[in-house]
Length: 138
Length: 166
Image 1 (cartoon, chains in turn green, blue):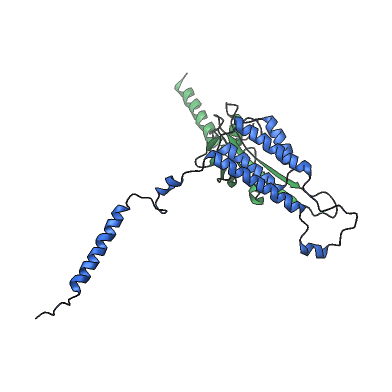
Image 2 (cartoon, helix red, strand yellow):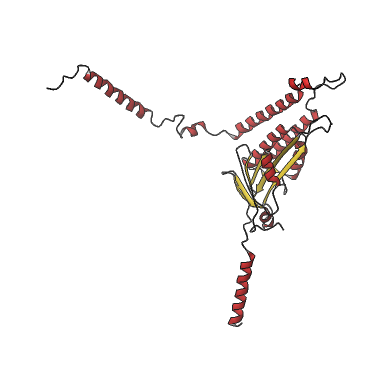
């Protein structure tokens, strides 16, 4: 292969890298029970090579009224987040706070999710990150 | 030339000196003994044991259940009574928490207790627990969720559902 061909090949490689943009490649779900903290990228956890990593939130809104025309609507909502690492270390938090449940509801397939909880297991933070570097769920 | 010192001066000085020596001595005597403000007292109190916490939560669960039962059985507040028309004679008695709801609560607790005992949460557990959770009052549901969270976070119960655990 001539020196010119090698130069062209290298230039192509660099140009492809430059066009790709930053890509997050961390696919590890983290659970820290001491700090009461968990985080993970939904798509990354799904694409990980093990079969145990998992992270998600579930939000439920329901009307508990009897359906009788005279009974007032009784809307309640609650939700939870959970995470499981490659070594099957798990974390779980829940909330009935409407704003917290609303955050859970906004979770997307390409979100990076972080959550914290207190000693009662109630979520004290639910943070969703959407970024160009986060891969979509495949 | 100088003023004559009062006769009580030596006695006063001796008294002050004695008090200082006494205070220093007490301080030395109490050295190392934890007080309520010292960090070392934390170890004296000691963390609650798992069994104690479990018992306390069980009591809390029972208290919540009692409250829910009494709340459902209670007559409506006086203010509402004034606004609402009196019930017809053939109206049912004050509503109570249906027995099937109590059954749901007990079933959910039994599923959770069994899972905690083996530190494993399976799809079958999730299904049974979820069915029961859908039929309990919100306050009881939150208490069940708190118990579930404690099982996962504090006791290391493994989530083996392969899907959302509830």
